[in-house]
Each structure stands twice: as C-alpha cells, then as structure tokens.
Image (cartoon, rainbow, N blue to C red; front, side):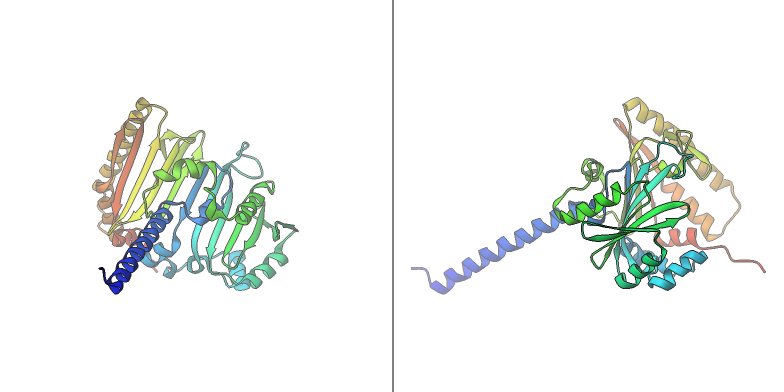
Length: 329
C-alpha cells in the first residue's frame, strides 16, 4: 500500500511540472509574438520597431549631448518628456503617399510610443497647441500642426501615446480601435501577420515591408548619396540583434531567383567599392578604423529568390562611429 504522504508528493510534483511547462509555453509564444507597440499600428506599407529600453542599456545613447530646436525644447519643458530617456518602445508605420510632391510629402507616419509619461502635463501641452480636438472611442484626439502637417495625437492608458500625420483620421482611429479590442489578442496589421515571422527572435530593432520608402528617389532607394540596386517598392526585412556583438541582417524578397542574383551582384559591387575606399584612406582615427572593421564583416548571399546582407559590429565600434570628432578652436 502506497504511503499517503508519498502520493501527495507525486501529485504536487506533477502539478508543478505542468505549471512550469505552461509558463514556458506562454513565454515562448510571447517571445515569438509581435510586440504590443507594433500590433497597435494600422495597415501600412512598412513597419519599423525599436526596443529602445534594451538599446539604451547597451549603448547609453541617452547620455550623448543633443542639439534641440526651440520647439522641441519647449515640448520637453512643458511635458517633462525626454524621448531618449523616457521612451522604452517605439513603432512606426510608413504610409506611401501617391503624390510625393504634395503637402504631405512622399511618406506619412503612424506612431506608437510606450514609456513613462506625465499624462496630465502632456494633455495640457496638447490642448494648448491643438487646432482641433475630437473624442473617439473614449479618448481625446488632438490635432497639432507640425512642420506643415496635421499631427493627430492621443494618449492610451498611462504609458502609451499614439500619433499619425496621415491626411485623414482613419489611421489613428484604427489604432484606438485596436487598443479597445485588446492588441494582445490580435495579430495586428496584415503586413505584420505576413512578415513578422521572418524577423529573428529577440531582435532589438527591426523593419518589415517597403522600409526604403523614406530614402526613395525616382523609384530607387538612395542612401548616403548612393543608389542601391533595388527598387523602392522592394519588400525587405531588416533586423538588429545583440549577441555579444550587434548583428545586422537585411533580407530582400525578390520576385524571382534572377532578380535576387542581380541584387547580390550589385550589392557585392558596392560593398567591394566601399571596402576599397575605406582601405585606401589614410585616416587612422577610431571612427575610420571601426568603419573598415564593420565593412570587412559584411557579406551578401543569395538563397533562391531572396538576397541577404549581414554584418556585425561591437558596441565599441558603434560608439566610435557616433562619437563626434574633436572640435578645433
């Protein structure tokens, strides 16, 4: 006959194992699920996400001196919000505008910020700056003029702010609807559902979709004066992940294997040119050395109808790139 105490011990052990398995499964699902800030975003052509809390800890970018405009300095004084210090997570939806020379420019943005905000001070500031105000889904939506555009802003809870500078209120209404429906239980936009699985797990920053839109000129992506060998409507997945070193990956989903091969050939040509120029320079300062080392780590490869660029950099190398050269007096 089995002793009752021993039987209870077996039952307790089994229950604990089941609970641990359930917790582990929940954590795994959460790790693979899109972050809340991204799930709140409306339908768009691209999504860019930053886990600023982790990046801030790794790089201390919040301690770098910044030059602020008068308007931005007024915003900080009025609200107490210093973005580089107080925002932990940020997600941006990029919306392609049909008329790039129109009043809204080539790209419009919808934004979600999660962090630490003084809700009352922010509301007072928005009310003082707003040209219009509406109440939608139980939230005040303020329209504030910013750089010639109408920026709609609303607070969701004590730690979340959403905004959009699209010409109509449709996008910010969509974000308020997603919040009301509980973003945790929804997959987010169709783009997020389709492409987030291609983002490496635990990436601290990533972008999916037509993320080249802000750099598009004449149908091509132009970066630092260089025209990349991919059209502006190319669907990309870019990610930054810290694993002892910062790992960068940019993956193009090309229409065909031949298109992917063309991209790889063009990118390798540009990469070899950049390496040659970096190697030829006589500069020996930390920034130049770091750039050469990062370029040496970069490579471009093809996998069927996709092309992939990878590179790595240490935190010290990134700091060297972002450190201003000493001023001469």
